[in-house]
Amino acid sequence: MERVVDGIKVECVLGDIAQQAGIEAVVNAANAELKPGGGVAGAIHRAAGPGLAEECRHLAPIRPGTAVITGAYNLPNRYVIHCLGPVYGVDKPSDQLLANCYRNALKLAEEHRISSIAFPAISTGIFGYPMEEAAKIAFQTIKEMAPLLKSVKLIRFVLRDKEALEIHQRVLASIFSEGN
Image (cartoon, rainbow, N blue to C red; front, side):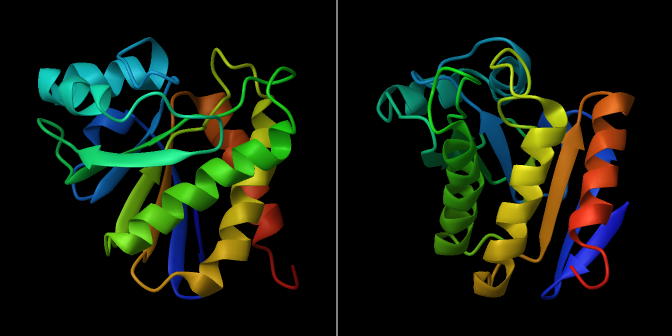
């Protein structure tokens, strides 16, 4: 499923964030130390190889809502943008911190003239953010940012399972429906 807003294609796909050939930058749902871990961070670091962890070592720690950019090493992309999402119910205000992840990632993409970016569902794994609420925040932030984006022309959400994909598709259709 896809929608176009201000000339930017926003789409949702089922897949592996570490296998996004043809996308210039992938977003890592990082931990504060930018180290390999479980979930998205583990998948990205395993696929990228040890060079990614070495570059990240000099950028850590980061705070919730912030984003940093590195090379992608063995990934089929040019860049990795690392975002530290909020731990739901712990890092507050969670909604603003999560929105800042998407906002700051898109700002970095613009600064580096990146045309395509793939996001996971930030904070919805071990950080416990409810999937539908997180999707609403993500798409609303993209809708607000879209008029400011000049380089970014494709925003892809890569979801790990069918349930996450269906939730994101429903929220995408709702937020980017006619008249909204």
